[in-house]
Length: 229
Figure (tube, rainbow, N blue to C red):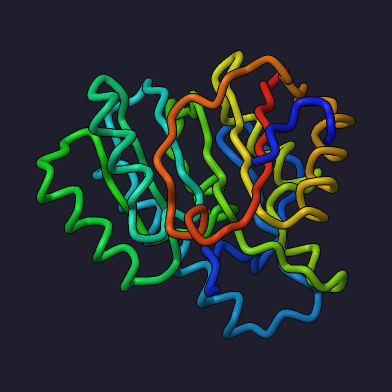
């Protein structure tokens, strides 16, 4: 077992359609593939404009440090987490409408005013996050492992995404990663162990347990905690 690890479908989707250059003060600058078709570029730019308009309405006023779950699915984990931490504002993102509708029903039934679910891809969220909004903690639980090597670029536990994410974290902010895919965990552990913006914390406890659908199905899984430098 690796140091800093606790060993214990359709998956949660959050694929990247564009990449990011080094971030500016207020986020990252989207960079399209040179061969991207104009209609695709227009579609993504329209989606980004919509997200920029929507986020200030649903997020708390800046400055604010919030909790983020990437790939929230039906909201099982984050609804319980928000209920247990009423002092924290929690945002869950996913790209599938059905999942988000179910998640919002959980929120509404529980009357959780500190919780919101929104349709967004993770890289685009960082691009559009309003100034003054930062993350105190980020959860990535049982993401799609993209097992084929040619698809590894779609994984979020990779150097460029983590570099951009680090710019939106509060000092000492934490990244929680859990997966049942052994190779993804090993690769992710290596990326974080050598990343200049992050450090692994083997002694950090897992902050909250609420089994997701994927966790219940997994015969075993591994977890790690990383802290932004």
